[in-house]
Image 1 (tube, rainbow, N blue to C red):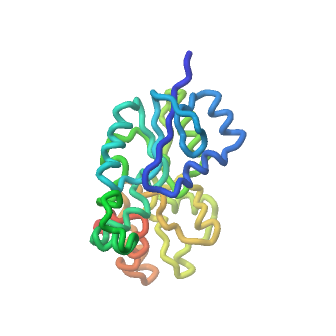
Image 2 (spheres, rainbow, N blue to C red):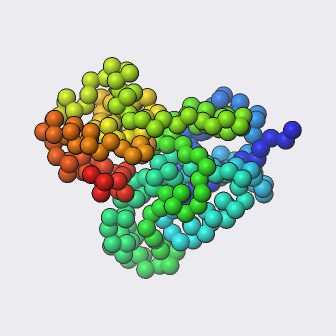
Image 3 (tube, rainbow, N blue to C red):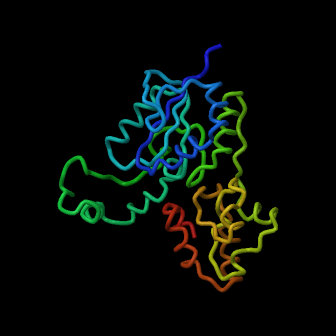
Length: 248
């Protein structure tokens, strides 16, 4: 039985999520034993046409990128969004808060008028094409990536948590970051990271995106309990959660 062909592509991103795959080292060799990589610019020079699974990192920030993503999707039996930029738009979506011409002038100065520097509103992959699976995080957890890919290869549906990071914090016995006067997004952010940031003494900044139907009322109660305001919470959501701020 032939191994499924896998191609990895990137759009607007730092490519840190692909680096996490490279950092799998020996575990990567095990994965390669069950898939056939045919394209991966960051890690291999060879290129072969045709693939069954497309793994895509990065957000879509130009009209021509939308066309390229649609072309990739048309050739892929399955598409996996890799990391926050691909799953939610990531930090790149901060650009949508500003006038795009101002953004171009700020970044490119006198070169802003050049046609190859055109820009558009940033989009997550699923705002352009159908996405089959998402690997959340900034950067991704490479063990979670390996788990999801193995499940897919075995024909099983991977379990992606749809409960908040607070659950993992409680399981680990972490003190709540609100007790330190911080504003943490744990009550509304999707778990699966093992609460790494709160466990390391830092508030959750929301890189895994929001749980489905976040408990907005509970979030408001927490803010009131710790004498914070909803605007305080929105300020934290700004980094990774542009499209969710208006729900509070």
